Length: 200
Image 1: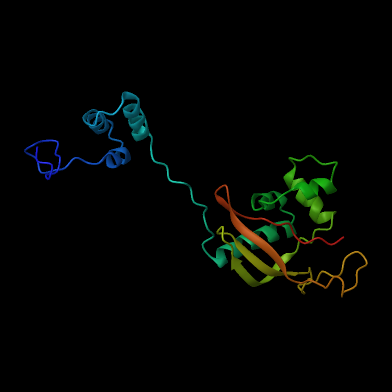
Image 2 (image 1 turned 60 degrees about the vertical axis):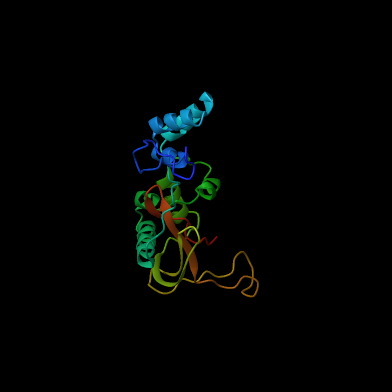
């Protein structure tokens, strides 16, 4: 046999046989059997190749990114507005953060009463469930989430400023009027990661 010519499945054909890698990717079990016999592969190795070919090639899922700053802002505004208006069940659907702090503050409550925990946080524990005044900055995180830096509005519409805590001076604990919230995907929906700011 002239080894300078391509090895074909039919002496009268010009098409070369596809390599084993191509057969594996195509899931061509019959082709693998033929190639395995031609190359005198052990039976167990041919079986492994056939099993691998039969398995679908699954792409690794990619984390979904927030498309725009406006999209993230709308979700954050809806979340803060829901808390401010007392629509706590709606706020639960927009929150993807932790409830452990709320459970620690409210040991008398059930862990599955998420709306009740948010209500207690806003109405009794010191969370400042205020409406958003404006976005003052943003950044896109490496995982596709967006972090928004926002100002909050007091009930009279004026800027909310959180003063020093627990007897500290302004030099020790400077007043803060800008708060960060992270918006990202969770179970197919955009949600907010953080609770509102806390004032004891």
